[in-house]
Structure formats: C-alpha cells, structure tokens
Image (cartoon, rainbow, N blue to C red):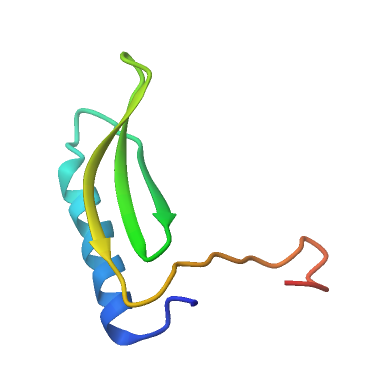
Length: 76
C-alpha cells in the first residue's frame, strides 16, 4: 500500500516530526525508518556502539511499500 490514506499520512508525519524534535541544534543525529509488514519503525543510529536503537513504531492498516522512479523516468 502506498501511504496515501489520511491516517497513515498523519502517522508518518507524526513520526517524522518526533524524529526532528529529538535532534538538538548542537548534535547531528541520524534517524532511519524501516518497515516490516504493517509496522513502521524509527531507529536512531548509534555509531559509537555500531547499533540501531529503536525509538518508536506505529502499526499501519496495511503493509508499507516504497517505490521510486528509475533515473530515466521511464519506469517506476
């Protein structure tokens, strides 16, 4: 499912805003998102420990799918 439904879009926006709020002006943090079925998970990269620390997750009504166009823009 592409994230086009209103509740899913709101949840994704909320996760993005939470990740942005967690980043302070003095420290740059790397936040990654991953999907496993209908669960969308936010991780914080910890380079010192070489780990990804789970920050938040949200269960969506359908599986999360990502797609982007080919550089030639001929195919999705």
